[in-house]
Amino acid sequence: MSIKKYGAAILRERARPVTEFGSELIGFAEKMKQLMEEAAGVGLAANQAGIDKSLFIAKLGDEVYAFVNPEILPLSSETVIDEEGCLSIPGVWVDVERHRKIRLTAQNLEGQPIRVELEDYFARVVQHEIDHLNGVLIIDRISTRERRRVADQLEEIEDREKSQPL
Ligand code: NI
Image (cartoon, rainbow, N blue to C red; front, side, top):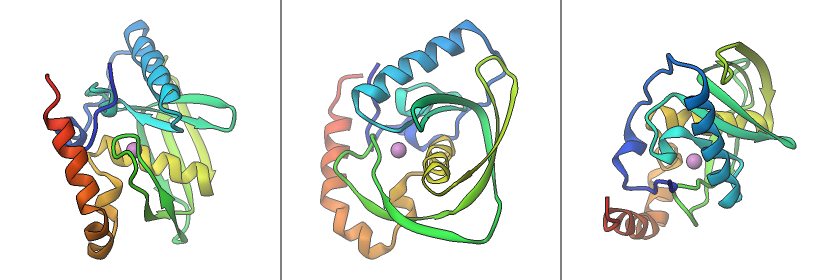
């Protein structure tokens, strides 16, 4: 298992809802955690690991948590712009506008409901990962001008990804 890079079709697909909980799902989350830690990331969505499931993991503080079938609700109209990178778009850093405060509802790996309110950095990480599960990448949330700035880098990543053997 490796992290899918920009150019991989699965990064543009909407993840399938999880209906079966248990050991297989826990196994996926474990592998994702390994991948994320090897890449020194703070979040990873299942489709970045080539798995078509609505699941992401995120390092919030010292712990890595798994969120299944996540949904978010902005808790205020306040937004914040800050720099973001993405393990699927290595070396590209862009300013992205996010809701400052959100409510995340999801399930854990056993199917139990989770409901948590998050602000600032944690809210940003979660919004980034949920974007992945909807097939959305940080480069979709930047200005045309920013997009032009990173165009060559994107092309390089895409070429490399598409030349990978399947
Ligand atoms: Ni990402």
